Image (tube, rainbow, N blue to C red):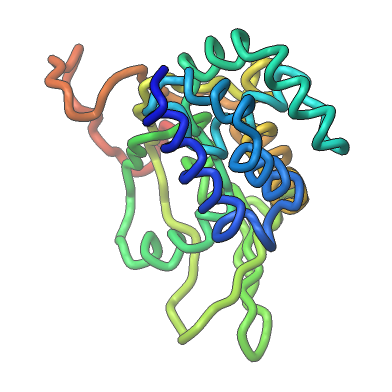
Length: 248
């Protein structure tokens, strides 16, 4: 750790406290401000590898490890006391926020594609965005436009504002898979805890969407641990899309 690393942490967390956290999470705004003002806390975080120091990742790791939320003084003491564990956990984690609401922006584009569709997501996390055809949507403009799965409304309802009058309907997805450096499994309790921890404190809708989206994703899906840019021989021929025999 160098003084330059400490200065970089102070500058980064100051920007986060002033420009990014306000209006989204009072807890994260207070934590980031304390990092910028507390040399001991900043020095602890400067030990984290530079590529793992982003505030949303570091703060999510702290919550996973049991950091106190309500008292910023107690939190600062906790950080310095648990610095080794924070550094170790941040070194093996990455931001893998998985927000099903992103599907509301994707649906109008997918509706333009004449199916069947093979859906491949790079940076898939737990695969919650691989199921745009299994969520219900309520688009708000002059009136509410409802779009539901072909087998009926989903328990996951995604609300979004809408401009214009695109043709909205469910895409025909017959194959889906994802690639991630470290894919998460929504069936595993520890992976579910990490997904929940990535939602900023105060963003209740994000917690609700992630929680309900996980129940939708608990079906077999191909999630591959790999780097998307790395050459890798295919173990078999690409899938053939055969209407009437969906693999989804």
